[in-house]
Image (cartoon, rainbow, N blue to C red; front, side):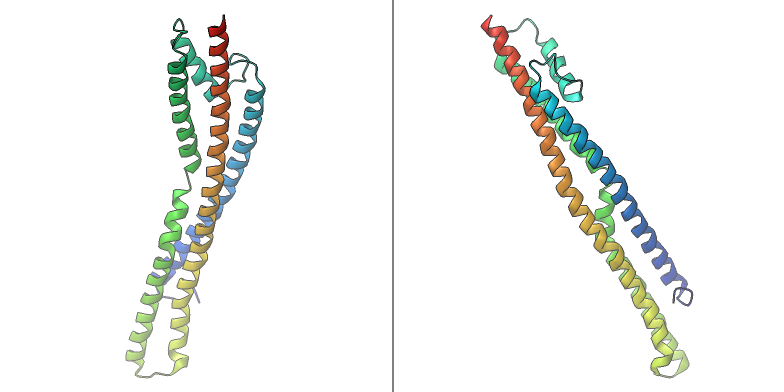
Length: 206
């Protein structure tokens, strides 16, 4: 059916197959990336939550940001609330950056999911149009004459749906997983902020 189709329909089919390959490639790569990130972040949360002070916390971007703000605020022990606000602001930006980093590569899934059905429909319309032209040239409405062309055209729609449906499902799956990852990063930020508050309280009690 592919070899007998018009070159435009063939191009549409090839494009949809490539889109499907991209979808599954992103799925495998992003699944591995998220699994690794979840494990690393869960270990970091456990370590930070059990640390007695900020200096004893394991090295990470969140801890480093809190330590940097802590050093910049040295000598201003009376401004404990201001210190916590500044640290929280830094951690919030790091949380947003982590979410954006995990979202990279998922935008193509949304694009494929939104456009693939219409691309397939274009191939179908083009193929059916050619079938009608063939009817006018052959001066016959015999189904055996036009059926192959229509079947080839409908194959483009089938490929469009085959590319779009997994892309939409995978995109929604990653949206939920990335939201869960951001929540985990948020829990780690809260643990870091508790360490900052604890250290500030110890200094204030001296």
